[in-house]
Amino acid sequence: MVTKRSVVFCVALIAACAPEPPATLAPDGPVAVTGGSVTGVLTENPDVIAFMGIPYAAPPVGSLRWSPPAPVVPWSGVTGATEYGSSCMGGGGRGGDEDCLYLNIWTRREKTEPQPVMVWIHGGGFTSGTGSGPSYVGTHLAERGVVAMTINYRLNVFGFMAHPALSAESGYGGSGNYGLMDIVAALEWVRDNIAAFGGDPNRVTIFGESAGAGAVMSTMLVPQSEGLFQRAISESDWVYGWDRGLSESVRGMPSAEAGGVRIAELLQVTDPRASLAEMRDADAGDVLAAFRQVEYSPFTREGYGWGPNVDGHVIPDDPVAMYESGRQHDVPLIVGMNGNEGSLFSRNLGIDEVAEFQALVRKAIPAQADGAIEHFAVASDEDVVAGLDHWVHDMYFAGPVRLHARAHAKVSSPAWLYHFTRVPPTPRGAALGSHHTAEIRYVFGNLTGPGTYTQPLAGEGEEVPRVDQAISEAMMSYWVQFAKTGNPNVAGQPVWPAYDPASDTYLEIGEQIHTGTGVHKAGGDLFDAVEAGKRAGR
Image (cartoon, rainbow, N blue to C red; front, side, top):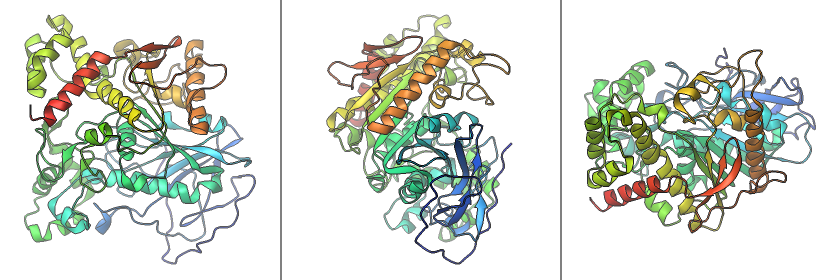
């Protein structure tokens, strides 16, 4: 089990000019980066070297808790980047550390021409997850000629807590989007350092799944990220609550600052004048415990949410309005979803009767409830499980995915839409179908090995089915070609047409790979109607 890498920090600044990197990266060959020098470790493929646990910002602790990421603190000598840094609080299991702003790199040892860079942003609902998940190991992507990276970013109450006092001290009148600021800081690190690892800072792809895809979708709106990436891939967009108001309740959601006030109450912070000092002095475990006491249910729209908010600075305006008017960064985009995104979540809602299902729909979307109930066609208690799957799939994944693809037609760069339908040969696949997260192992080529959230496709000594090997090869080829050229089409694979709202063409990735039209259109239309109704006050 990997542990947090220890780094010896010093207070002296290092020289700004780094030496020319070696032609071949070796475990005993230091690489100069912002803050100092690091050495890596060979992977199971000796042609690929990994550098893990490299800090891209100062530890966000003490006075830096709930502050924008600060510059890396320099260290003396050479440190071994051979183990993952700590996961962020709440990220890896139930633990983690506030000192967590680390990134990981996999790259070919031989340096020829600069390689495109793929920066993975992990999922977890903006409340959990880590860049060191075993499914995210980048060796197989690096073998195909990219520099693969994963990053940590602050989560839950540490990454997304707004508060009136934080907004007052910020200088721009907002607070709460620290996790997105971390992602921007990591991309700035890439711009400044990735050439030393063989990467091309002018061909950077951000890609992520679930909240990681929501982070991609959000980062495409962040003014501070402009020019830091040139392509984007969103797998199963998760954007619930990203249109939350900073200080005012909008569309039935409590404000982001109201959530921070509730955290302060749970921490028994009583003096508003000293609230920030008290909260920053609070034990990190106590802060995390307070977060876990706050009611939060995106599927019933109850309680507070933890994720991006419209602060007017990091997220300048209502994200839906920004996309609908083409105000996202104009970069090529791949976006898509899996066959049954809802199944991983719906079984935990405790709903098993028609009346309960209808009550959920009427509570969540009262103005469109009658049409939605007809759309989901839950006529008996036996239909409830499938209806809940359908509800979560359409309203929380298919709708945002289709919005993302459709809105990109308003800019000059093309988009490509996919639908992943393979049911993985795993216990979770047998129970949940082509479920949320199912595509991740195929994208990274990590079809076997450890992992519980994304289960291996074969056990020790077993062979991965050929169809799954072929799907993984195809997805990696599409994704890597996109990172290299800005277009996923590659010789020898089915042609993937660019998305056009008029034709509504997508690529199905399953036992066969082929094109189709109108994927989950009815659900996407319902989502659009719900969002339009909310903004019209209905």
